[in-house]
Image (cartoon, rainbow, N blue to C red):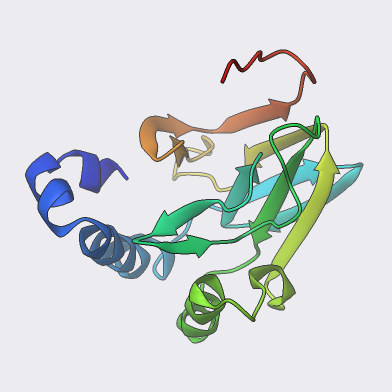
Length: 167
């Protein structure tokens, strides 16, 4: 998202194709070589991975008019979030995951490298990768499609009923 947001003209003209190029480019530049690894702690369980997604609605987003479903069965009004964790970033996993992301029949959460957690009220993500000085390496964070910076730790929680929606 940082790269996409840095080029608003390309973002507007190429739309989902520019996002696709940016994602593939980032995967080959960063994830395959030396991804930041982190721990996801949710429901008393701690797992290690390279990408975490917190979601409060389904679908997660759209690719043109195709809904992208990562975590399913999550709604704005159920008082919880869902989390998905990609455990590793290997080239051999990306085509099957991309196929699942764009498929109406296959489920992303059923891929062997993805863990999904439903009905989450609290979760945290902490970097376990260290730089040469032993300092935790930050990971990039986006919220609702906007890049908001790099962090070494995030906490997620839900306050049911905190948002009033008037239609």
